[in-house]
Image (tube, rainbow, N blue to C red; front, side, top):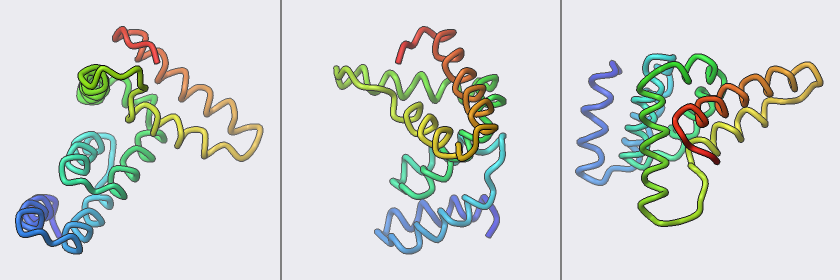
Length: 135
């Protein structure tokens, strides 16, 4: 299934309330994840409430966070998530950031992986500071 077809079928599946077909489209989109597509696919996963695909996206983001923090689309996604939390007037953390932190931490299984995880988390924290978010 091509990406364009997956997006089209996903829209139709959502319109006609076909959750199995939506999940199938989500699985197709998950196979296409790369640095250029992950933020867009994550947005689609949120829009169509595809929790598994959303989780796969944040897991992928955690793996490439040091590159993503330099991308404007990722920075925009973090800002939008922060604005959504602020709009609810909650003292809450940013869900996207929390999910990425979780996936970075969950990959640590050895002492050598600790330093790599700390570098990833530092890159994320530096981004948050640079855009004026403290969470």
